[in-house]
Amino acid sequence: MKSYRAYEYQAKRDNAHAITQREYEEKQSRDLEAMKSSSQKYYEAQRTEQIAEYVVANRAPPLPAVQEISTKPTSSYSVPKPSVSSTPGQIVNCDGAGCWDTNGTRYNKGAGDTYFPSTGGVCQNVGGQMNCS
Image (cartoon, rainbow, N blue to C red; front, side):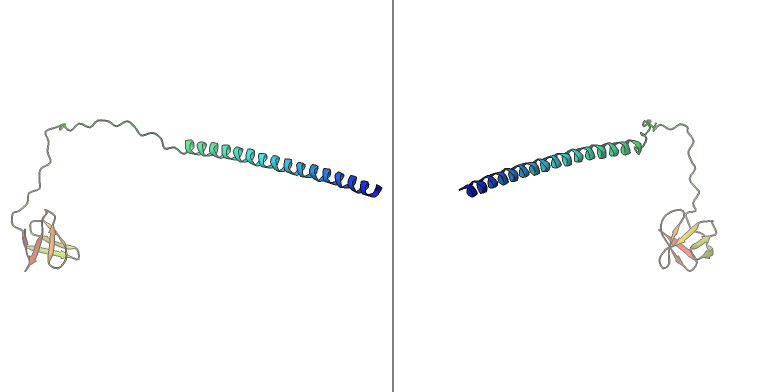
């Protein structure tokens, strides 16, 4: 009977020790999780502060106020339009990019015999004479 009581005593003591050990480990685990959570919150707060400082430091300067622009002419002077001969002159000189005529008009080369005069429009070179539309 004595050995049964000793066994029972030992079992209760081992059980109490195991329960105490388990409670200690659970408390350690809860403390560790609390530390992780606290550390994560601290890190997030630091990161948010760093981002805010970066944004403020790298913010573009404000744009100046928009000034109203007057559409009224400031003077009566107007630019004269260049005088354009109604008929193209005779072609006198050509290079790889186009030709010049006797009136001083430049004809920039397009595809084939198509040319674009500096006065606007489209022309065809027919036998050294520009036919423009």
